[in-house]
Length: 558
Image (cartoon, rainbow, N blue to C red):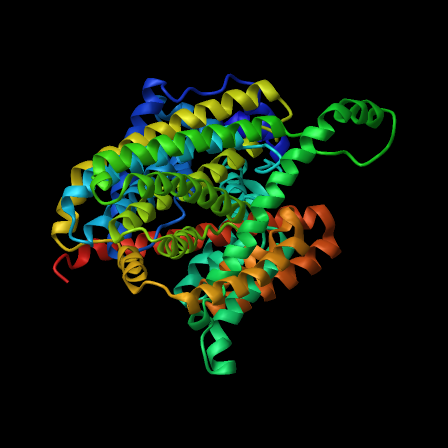
């Protein structure tokens, strides 16, 4: 293998070398053993961190580094783990297990538990599992369509790919990566938001600028004007308006692509005879996108019905109200998934909690009882995080597979990643079914459950509705002006929903630095900045992961 390393003078050579080989199989005995072991570890970490701290780590990068380390062990068993595509499969599985167990299923079942209805937990958990699996499958169907393009930012996916490439290639990029990791660890240690700074080196500049401005506005508004934006439901209103316009824009995009379908071949032929700028060609069409959305609607309705029947919601509502709830649950699940996915694609941040709260508030106006709202929150919470996380992993794989140059290899790679995702999901599902009661009976409940409960119990009135509608108009106008690609409305609203003004200021400063670097050094500067930013994110993730995990075993009685 030492001779092989000498050939790798660039990313392109490294990628070409591994793409010339057969793509590794998820169910290869050696690979599946490592996947299962790392997924079990990921599920435990996910459950522990979500109940203790209410947070998640960047498990994609953690998984990638674990795979790289396994590949460095000088044993015959580990030889195949030097392959970057094997590493991609392993990080895909552990990432899914971590998010699936923590952010998805533990949050889902905790929402009804805090209402003292343990008899309804099995129902909500079964519904959550169905939504979780649909969520994963939807991203597999939709990745590299016009709505979820492989050529979009997906910052965490880029960071993971750069981590794998730098570790395999060594040389200049490895130095940049290590520098970034050290800076990420040191910066996080002294309290700097290195993860946000790293993301600002990778995502869409315009969208991230809006996000940072939102962070600053929400953080400093009270000191500037004497009241908080939350008092008047500004963040929720802006997100509702921006989200609705984004959905309309998505529908228009689908229709537009249908109309352009017949003209695409002619343009492609004309392009070959001209020197026009090359246009990115998606591997999946607008038709594939619309089919995926249609199938998703049907599957989410079936999942909501199953959850309602097993969970006992049939006895809580009239038949008419139950039908309305099922349709609304489908809409909440699908819309939450798309909003979270779009936000993650551009910024590396997915406002899953924010979208759930929005649908809870709107559900209160419809008049659903508390238990129905809790089930709604649990169901919607299961769509989005895994969808976005798989988007990151598929972006990583797309980069490592040569950015779609070999379509056959790309399709095979995505399929193997989907299998790995399902294995990680299965481990997460089993872990949560076995352990959630022991966690909750010991009082170890995800903090977000209390937020959802307080939102449901608070109720709403006409004044709240008026505020939401007013600021929905603002969010809608911003999103309409920005267009679907930049998502300024959604990103601004996402920033308004987070209390971290320091991250907003740091992010804007780094975006300015990035703008100067890209202008002065061009594409080479952008590539180097990507590696450094990946290191910052990895360093921040590693620091948070290890410090929080060690805290878990220090004082179990505290």
